[in-house]
Image (cartoon, rainbow, N blue to C red):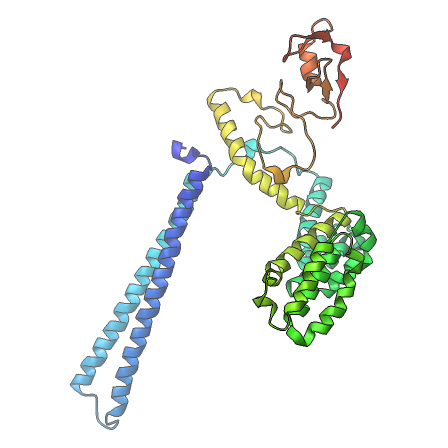
Length: 401
């Protein structure tokens, strides 16, 4: 394996492969356009010859001129087919270059960063299949999820699947601008939504009111009567309700020609889908994003860095540094959207604390891990690594976040 085969999957590698893909797509488009034009011209040429022959005397034999024209037409058809065949072969060559570019720019073996036996065993495989099944249900792929349950012989209670079925049914209705299933669900769960300070039901009523406004003067009275649904939300959404009621003044001339044009923005339909998904998942105790999607995205972000550090450690012959697969040898920032709870990484050992290695607070106020405290302990005396204070190790107190 030469050095080019060991190239790590960084951004440059992605760009190199993308460049080859762009070339293939461009050639696909060019060959397709050229083939369409060539075949169209050929069909028109043959149609013209056929028309000329049909206009002649059908009883007479083919003349020398007509024979020459037919031979030239056959030669043109043969040459055209040969050129198109050559273009097709050249296209195959370009496609094969993409595969070579992927092999050249990316490492296929990622076993160095994997945990051996992570999915070995009936119980672990069953848990993995359940996670995949839940992901399909979240994405609305109900048929695939049901098929996976049968093939993997999973024992999943119908009560676990029902929330996903209902959520997907309501989301599909919202995408079709049908608010009533979501409104019925919000009314049934009004108390629980209010406990989590959700504005979902109000936003659904507001969006329905706006749809009535779009109906013009013919639905003005209907919109006015529907505004009674805003009464339970008057305390928390007074200003928004005032704006909605003010828009009624411009129904005659058209809300789209008024200062309330922003109410008609289609973005409100996208927003209501996001709000419903977030609040409904919170109500049901589910994460908004699929855990499988989050784990996969985190792996894609961290894998290049892990492969890089593994490659460096092999070059420097320090492979024993990373000997615990449940710990990362470097800190990887996955972004704020993947931070779900408070964590503490020991500033001395640069390891994330665990239940067996919790953070401890020294008398001086600095916080380190228990393992670091044990390493600094000399005859039950510890000198803080950040300040001159010397103290007893037994005076350190565990910290809970």
